[in-house]
Length: 231
Length: 87
Image 1 (tube, rainbow over the protein chains, first blue to last red):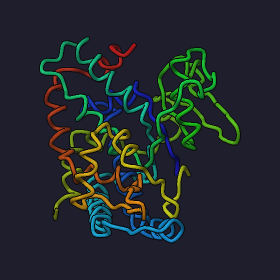
Image 2: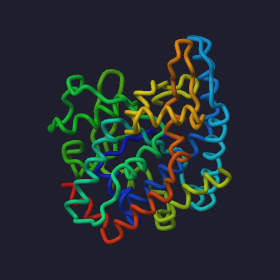
Image 3: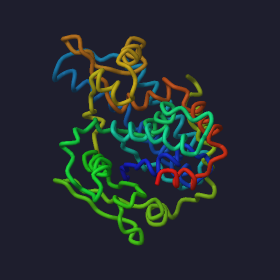
Image 4: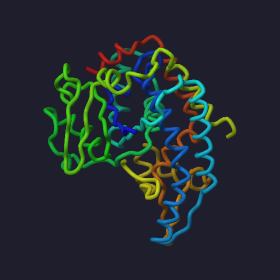
């Protein structure tokens, strides 16, 4: 049951290009998000009630919570039917405000560089990342982020993974995983540790039993709609 | 595990708006319409469970249509070209 943080050098190709291996991996994360929500959203009522008992207050939107859990279960069931038997449903993405913002900025940069006209809407693209995340970190004060990599710009993604309690950080950045041949690198801060892995290493060593050739990344829009069938 | 459902991360309206890069007005509209679950505090403030907020994106936006639009606009670009543009 790995919790993962996905760097923008993987999340951008995954969300922007429907035919690549990274999009197939994104389908896996969408499947994980649906399964996680189907199981955990109902429990959030208990959590909210405990909070209400502690601090007072009144819970609203129980119906909304129930509807979200039902939608997640429908999405999970639809994906289970369409994905090859044995496709794991326990890969969960963690995001963060800073990571989402960096992603959005890079969507604009990449579209301009590749002269895509009309370009994809950065806000729409950002939502594709937010939607597969089951949890997210708040924005960090740069002064609070320790030096973790050879490039201070990359410290934030490692810190997001460490703070979020992720098991894996998936990144093809040479500063995050400097040894391309090794394919992985560990980071630690306080009690938290995270293993950063290159995307290829992830596929070869963690997800080698997935039948990738039977997963079509172009099905993802259809899978999103499946969860909303009785909206 | 980053957080437990039994002790969900609760966000203020401002934090929820910041997380999703939407206006506080948008979050308040979702609250008014009960499109998201929330805790109303005795002092009148709101607390929104983060997991449910992220999950609600699927209901508050047409994610499938939006992704299809992105895919159509990026149809002539390959994964390798995007990766190269990021370097």
